[in-house]
Length: 307
Image (tube, rainbow, N blue to C red; front, top):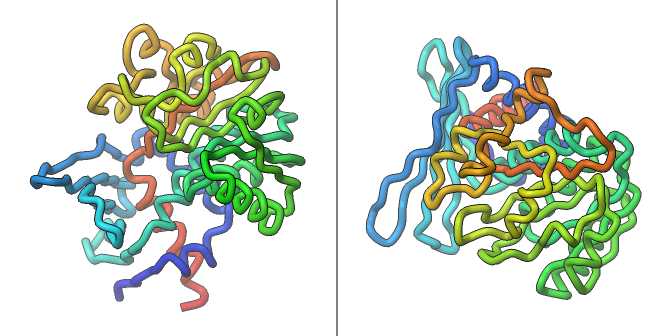
């Protein structure tokens, strides 16, 4: 029987440790070839596109996520999980929560793999859904003692800080500038909709790890390229997918492409991660295809005893 899953069910059942662990396993599976995850495909439809990401965990399941770019206020993503042996649809998730938690979980893996082991402070630029799941997941892998947040809206950053305090139990404060948010932070999250840089390398302290979630393409990026210049460690969840971006993703172009590491390879010990406490590390999140389906499979297993 096909299971239909809504956003409230995702929020109630998927905690941060479970999500981060699922994404860690997905990245390792992609690195060793068990998770087949080609770059996303898009179909122009006049006024918008339908976008498809798909994945196949060999011998177990296959599935896809579909969403559009028409910009309708009630547009929702659909994630479909098929049984790999029979082809039957095991589950369908409709909404935004699964995808957001997937992206947050990937960010949590990056923080765990690349940030300093003793990282305890986090600065976040942005106050939307993606910013929240990044902080939510980071708190599962590091004992955060303080979060600072900046966004263009004073009311939204106040509300974001209040949510961090209430739901994560971490002291959090809204601040008026980007520089104030990232100054002396061990981890920085960039999760904005800005197409122009809001962060430069000069804003950061030695040893900072950065998760970049928003625009990161040529002529459309939320950070200045000097951040890539100073990064001793530059990683992505899918270098192949990064190379397929249009316009191209900055970290996948010369002179940075040769330095862009596969986060799965770092997890597997096949590529180096951080080797010094003062190094700047940068994770360019692209949303490895198939990871939403991987997380849906994990969610179905979590929900199974209750159904």
